[in-house]
Length: 105
Image (cartoon, rainbow, N blue to C red; front, side, top):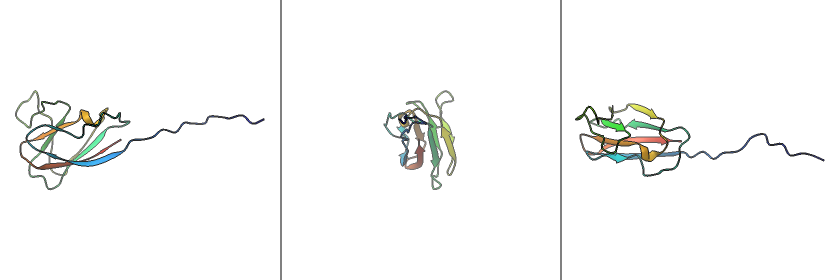
């Protein structure tokens, strides 16, 4: 009689991509609390005239407060954040209509 042998288990990987318009009010990549296996990769759009600041605070600032400023991304720059969810990533700019593209897993 044959025995069943469990060799491995399948897991579903959540992958999401998108674009977010960032202005002078802090916004999240998304409001999704779904757990991520890796994190979020963010790229500032090449057409952005101003930087976008990225961080984990809801009160993130754009170059105006050393204690609250996020990490600045100039046009075309990329950063990977080992975030536990998309909702944990906040962004702001010192100008309206800046765009970031993201990939999460």
